[in-house]
Length: 133
Image (cartoon, rainbow, N blue to C red; front, side, top):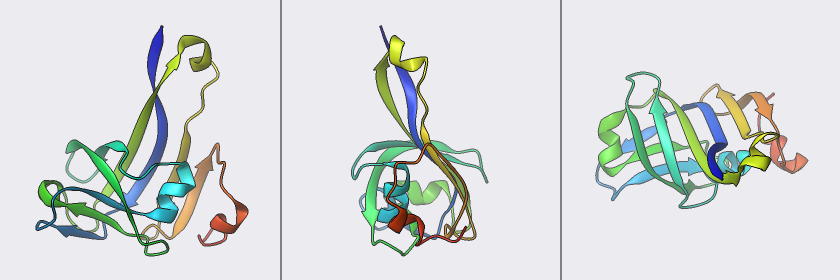
């Protein structure tokens, strides 16, 4: 039997901009995506801690080092600059794998420039040096 499990999570990612005139999606700094292993154009579930909104869209890589989290298109109506988001991806796995499964997660602070907590990382050390600890 297959079960659905949390694969990656960016917790407390701060919205840095909202662009209503864009076609849709959530732009996420490429380095933030790499930090947890999130893939370009991957389907994401987003929860806005400020207003309780939850929505599905897909991740678009923003330029590395910008720490950008930008609500695009219709999602721009679901939050504003400064809101904190939980951005999640999921996977399907066999029940036998689920027993020992650990998602890759990062808790962010200071406008996405500092890592507060990193769980189950598989990231190159060079990437970690671009963040404040």
